Image (cartoon, rainbow, N blue to C red; front, side, top):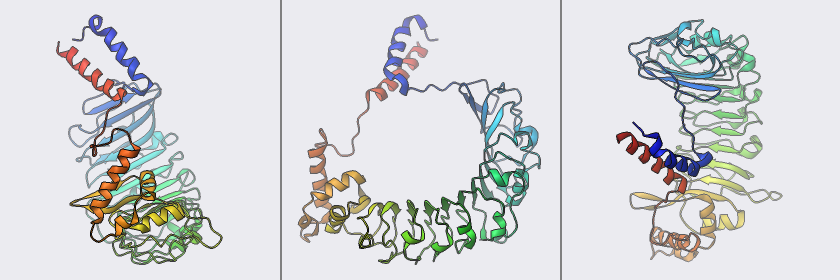
Length: 425
């Protein structure tokens, strides 16, 4: 046992040193197979190791005045009924991971219709249409994520309204992933006038759904589909974030900035056959652009119009063919762009330099050193990077990749050792 009288002063001193940065979890009474953590107003219940394929009863937990977040994670789980979600508190978030045969009773979430704001569900045998009927009456639901598993049949065509009832007005974010969705018609999202986020990753779409321009979307995720020739004209002008990574993109409609004037983040990574044309990003002057592991071989793609200010774009270009040359320096000096990524290969690894540091570093690099065929680019850049670190970061000489602990981190370790030692004694 811990001797409170003997160690009290030391413990208090350590807690004062840690200060407000220390957050001690408060465990509340839980049940077998679950783990509970609570604060004054919220409680998180995670059941990941309960026996059998049925959900343990949660009614014994005293959660009447709490906002409850519940996770059920059991590979053998085959059915979720209304009684399984009766937690005694205000259920606001639910995540369920189960077997490929998982189904939900039609009234499974009815007791939380006015409180549930987020659902993240596994869907057995690709029956996500069955889940839509279950959630239709959830008038407070803002975020719905569905993940299909089990045996896939034919590719799915979404042609009918997927939800009806109160949820059509409350839903803000919808995600359907790994469900073999091949085509989506406008009728499928009928009534979802307040939808701002749509995610359809890991499906089999070949085109951007044509009707999306009619929705007030600010984010669209279409990662890992088969959209080889995306037409950005099908997207709404309100869009701020677009992800088309891992789609086998070959060509893309030009003038991204004109098509999507509010776009602040675009992910085209992992499309190895995509080579941006000079017109693709013309006048694209701000935000984040991820072109990692594409066929990019030049940074001349970023340029403004005659009346436009210089671009201020943050790039990710790791795994591309962009040479570590004076072109990087020219872009930084002339256009003041922030480039973060990998520009040289060092043996089996890569040299990563954070964007703000790279901007300052490359402005002072001797371009002749980078382009001299007698001096390998990698060794030259590595040497100059170390020189830059030594000149700008005190104590970095002779250190490569080392880190130091803060006083607070050291105190946290000390506290852990203290408690362990006291317990043993």
